[in-house]
Image 1: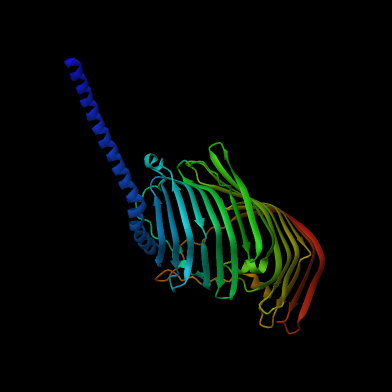
Image 2: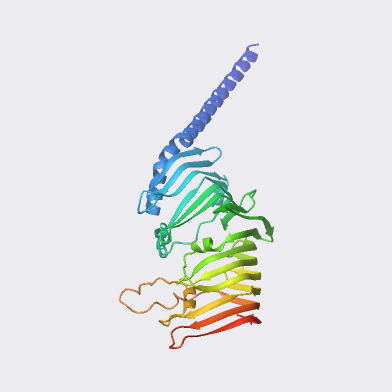
Length: 413
């Protein structure tokens, strides 16, 4: 009986020691979890907000404020609310974002790559101001920073399921006093990556918005072909006002576009494979209707009742453009040489802003003006063309005209 009692006491002692160790271990786990939760939910957001404001302000060269930062350390999510980026020259808002939400993947820790499963940008609003020729309120951001020598390769990353919700862009042209609005901007980007695998993609590629009240919409799909991820957008633009669109272009001409509408039906494919450069492929048709252009003195210059660019193929990465067929219907041109010997057709040339020469004089270094596209046109058909020419610079002004001329050209490059 004594031996049996001693055995029971020994067993109880062992169980008691193990129970105490288990309780201590559980308490330690609870303390670690609580400390991790407090650090993630409370301390990290308070420390991150001012540091984020400082880092963005120094990087962008303008004041940046953030209203709130929230972190969920267990789900690895970050929410940044009330982001405001000011203009550099005044106190106006350049960009304002209601909320940015990011969901990171745990595999980032052992794959040595930044992998983000989802990003949501809610309520972004940008105000773009054109202050002069080729000068905007964001021009300073395009200068960039010089690359440090020996910086090494770009880090691997993947950002998937990018969504933009209820965005808006306001464009103000202080040169022409024009104002344009893009409202109701919603977009979906399946992924952006560099040498890193992406998690499950559930966002389909799409863009929808209203440009000055006119709807713009593009939708597509993402698929895998071999080791290549392909994202295709189907773009349909109908009855877009050409004068309004051209006023947004950074390049201006002396002539004035007074009328015209644009229809575009195209598919845009973005393809990316590990270890290879991304590829962009654009195919579609473009239709111009009722294009009217007047010269600098408000005289008639060019009229295009109808123009079709059919079976267009563009590879911007390779610098190639191919158009299978161009059909121009009933164009009319009015060319005038005025009393000072100035040709009104020159108003169609882009107005180039003079660029300063390098310090110390000399010419522009070779290679800086090179570039452009390799353009091929299979067939050009011009139907019922009309034209007139008047020379007012001679002692005896004279004129000539062409009516109802039709011809075609093949194999232009």
